[in-house]
Length: 273
Image 1 (cartoon, rainbow, N blue to C red):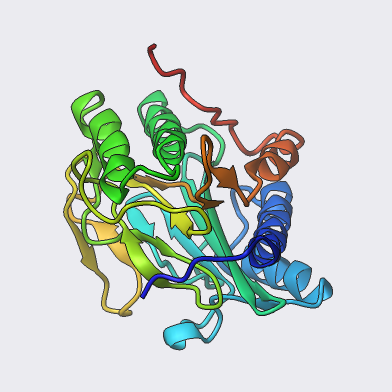
Image 2 (image 1 turned 45 degrees about the vertical axis):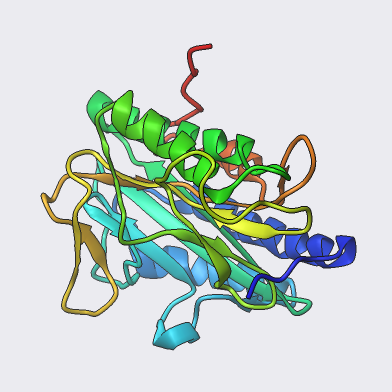
């Protein structure tokens, strides 16, 4: 069942999303080669709890941490540990959720550390740009397939990367995962019609190589089957007339990493008119 949100409920979701991005911004200030997933996980949890909220992921479905931390060929759902130590040239995808005032917020960002190859930086730029192309389609009167098509067409047809099919975005509200599923692939004019008040997390997961993935023995970490790098960016948005409302704020993260010489800025790749 799809739940449409009131203006007040959307504001609660926005507040949760902003706290997610504050936590990710602190991660952006701290992250560097030599630091571990456990350390950035503790940082994010402290930020969230200091604001009177709860980590949205920790304990949900049995997940053991505040953040999902996925490095290089790890697509999503990586478990942050002390043994997960970042190296120069890694890309680190960090996904975070918050539960506050009865509503969830959700956002993700990929951090390129140190001397990342231009090939992989281009993957990050294209993935990030595809997120905004999907968001442009999240307006009342369009359909879910319009979002998926915009992402897939740009990523696969124009750039030759692989859009992951096994994992998708989702509705969000009082539950982290609500209907509808938001695929990063699809056909224009297909799927659920978008209406005002729908809140969804749009999150392209893009592999440098093929789209196929597999899940590790830990039952959580999803990896690219060909072991090539993968990037992941996510915003929570509210469908509206004319233009979607982006409820999360990646600018907080971008501003934070601007002061960290260990992180390369990604930026949004220019799209040809």
